[in-house]
Amino acid sequence: MQGPALVGFGEAGSTFAAAGQWEGARGFDLIEARRDAMAAAGITACDSARVALQGAEIALCLVTADQALAAAEAYGTHLSPGALWFDMNSVAPDTKRAAAAAIEAAGGRYVDVAVLAPVEPARLKVPLLLAGPAAGDAETALRALGFSNVRVVGDEVGKASAIKMIRSVMVKGIEALTAEMMLAAEKAGVTDEVLASLDASEKALPWRERAEYNIERMVTHGLRRAAEMEESAKTLAALGVEPVMTAGTVRRQREQAGKPIERSPNA
Image (spheres, rainbow, N blue to C red):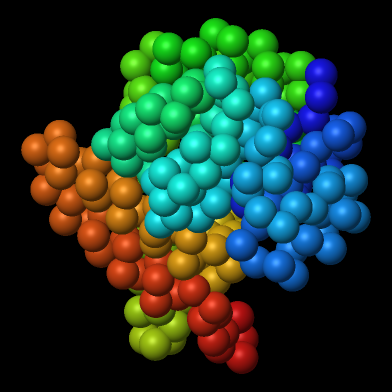
């Protein structure tokens, strides 16, 4: 199968491209500096989305959460009739349904994709959930590209996203709570005691390792995760659930981005 068109070439796009080694793949990113990275991954960098999408049967949309709908609306008109648009962004079901409307109005076929784990180190083995009327064809296409952990969860756009967004309430919430706990523990000078007490009640992973991992994810990806959690908040609100903790997670993820916690000398 000819390689896909990639719209967006951040962490996920570059990781998938390097792993897939897709012959004939083309890419576009608004950030011009990423075009050298495309070339290094064997992707033909294009000056416009129109050129990247021309004649492509498959398009992987891997932009940021706040640009997912805009990308579908702006670039959907460049798709070939019947082309599959894989929306792999972490956004609310309503956002995906709006994007689907734009893609389908342009003659493309929209696929709701939920990416359920970090793309590194899983790469093409990362768990993917698919939903939408074209999900069956989409699964076949993704497996042909080398993705091996793919599952269809329904034919209704928004179902895969709902699973991801609601799951993220817990995953990102734990990270945010960890940061809040560690900020307070460091200031109070009781970090070792607090972590030891958690270790005593749960042995799956030492809490110092867990805390360091959770905070590293926020420091490195806090802005992107905050945008995703805003979409989780929309998901809960649409279900009639007030996103009290989720709103706090948005704020904490954004505040921690790029700001590692200072460790005490004996940490």
